[in-house]
Length: 351
Image 1 (cartoon, rainbow, N blue to C red):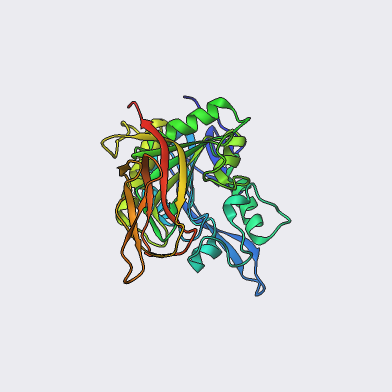
Image 2: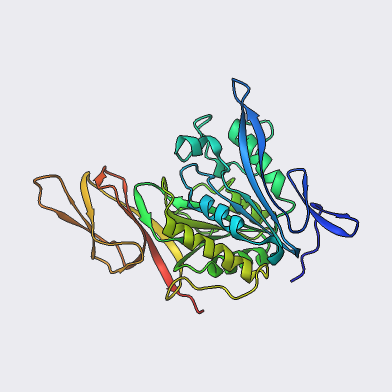
């Protein structure tokens, strides 16, 4: 597929230069730099690290965004490692990484910024006159949007849960059908077992909950195919999860023609998850899980056992047949807390 240079590519002396965040990059160049963002009360600025790899030949521009939620860092590490190890001359196109989009939350090791308590992934495309998180979202989106042809938005499940890497492709109403379809295809190409397809026109009752301002949805509305890579759990840089993410990015790049070779399937089989739900506990206590991510359970099977010290353990039954996407790992649980994240409708992908 041909990708003609956009307004963020400049022709100088017959050479096509990539332009990102107001800077120019030559073919074969790899650059690491930091942008100054909004200022704090002591006049220190909130920094935004950026990594750019400008390939040796023309092609797509893949945007990798990490730590939009500050404690979700496996994708950040994967972006760093991938670009560090790639030879730009072997890449057709470009890779732009904003590995720590939400620096304040990253430093505080929590999901949202302590500066304004806003969730950055509900603030895109940003607001130049808004709060700090909104202004940062504006800087990030405006700096990359015109150059990017595709996006992987990296996340993790939260700290008290565990999950194998999975992808989420959202079908956005009124978006270009080709863009929605490409997002689903690239999510599958990532090569992991569980691949969630969320049709936002009928996704009530399940995550993603608030969708307004999500980076992947904003990109899709702007004609940029995008999906989420959910890589392990928060608060830890897990080498096994990072390796899977690095290979997943390479798989996407190979699918887009940015690298030679064929994608590597990272599992024995792939599923598409078409309906999902968090199941919640109706009583507090201590919960010992009986299932793990990737399990398939039947209605009535025990997901875990709830007890309180001398109490006799009480099984927590699966409400229906389900694919287990994520499970709770922290045993202390209150009424209404999440027990597990289940796929309620799933089917084999035809590879």
